[in-house]
Length: 221
Image 1 (spheres, rainbow, N blue to C red):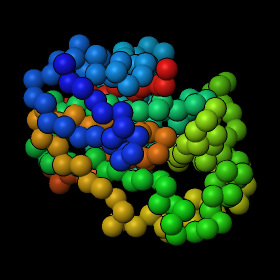
Image 2 (image 1 turned 30 degrees about the horizontal axis):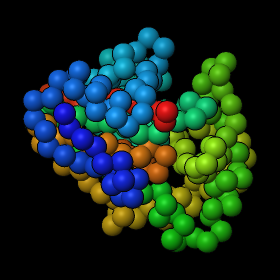
Image 3 (image 1 turned 60 degrees about the vertical axis):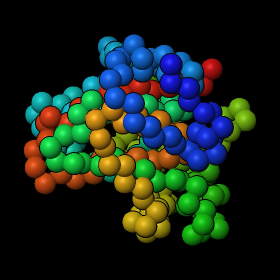
């Protein structure tokens, strides 16, 4: 059994290992070391199969439904939950013919470039658009004993010009040098703190529908 170092995950914010041959049962067992695996949508399975697909073939309100085969912007997974999943597990079954990376950005770096940003992130309201389950939230939140980030421009809408200006400010301080590119190989396992790290999908110069990542969203116990 693969043993995950919670100390490393807490300190660094992510862990990447190469463990070829894992099956879905193994991934569930690994995720249960960390927390509780959860479904991302009502009719979904606990394990999501992620491959680049065209907009016409994707779920209407998904990232693939908005961006198709293109790159995905930096975001928080399950931002439409009242409290987003704490951790995300990704496993590379096939890295794909395009060599498309996953992008990681430590949102704590926001505070390195703007001292006033913390209070803005914790006070400016956005509306999470999720049908009858829509709600108001901020980008920087507090839950029990932990602060966490929530950012997803596809489901979070500014409620004022102040919110729009805040998103522009965020764009201005997300520097390429601070983004970590995860290059996938077969059997790579990535687990990251979804409350701390924003992530996105890089670009591919070829159609890479052969790329297959398995994903498990994990909440705290």
